[in-house]
Image (tube, rainbow, N blue to C red; front, top):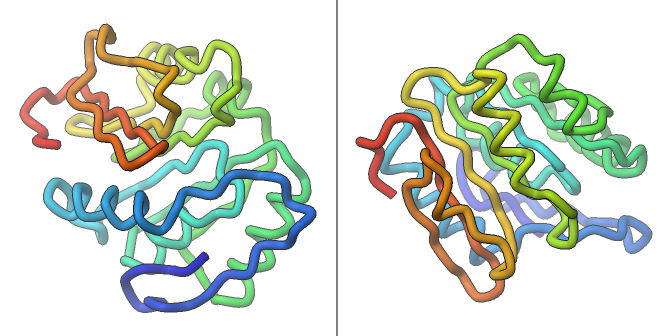
Amino acid sequence: MRIISGKNRGRKINVPKNLHIRPTTDFAKESLFNIINNNFNYNTLDVLDLFSGTGCISYEFASRGAKSVVAVDKNFKCIDFISKNVYEIKFSNIKVIRANVFSFLNTISKKFDLIFADPPYSLPHIEKVTELVFSNNILNKNGCLIIEHSEKSCFSDHEYFLKQRNYGSVNFSFLSEDQSLSF
């Protein structure tokens, strides 16, 4: 795994074999960030990375100069791995939180410009993430929720659905109250 762009471009992150997670592929990650580049200014973004896993999405946002990134995962090994990388790479704009994502979304009072969620593909009721984000009003005006998911999940019936993009076995659904965003 590597950081694709920004001040830490090309930096390799070695994921331990005992961290049993599915990181976003470099191909899908690069495609996703090309889309984000066209809609957002990184240095003004407050980002929430849910189900952070290896932290690869958080590192990418931080490397590109996001104002702040909050990485949330309930797995202690993942949180420990992300925290270690944040320290080693000297990311001052990433805050790491160990929490159940669903509980966290019910208690957070801060709003974000961009929320990225990469739940396990087999997670039941994956749509609950969208329900909690929008019902708890966690997105800023013009903000966007991006969910990474398998082809088995579909968000096109959601009232704030904008677009779905497919990159091999990786799918990204973009949701926002701001229907003018172009994905």
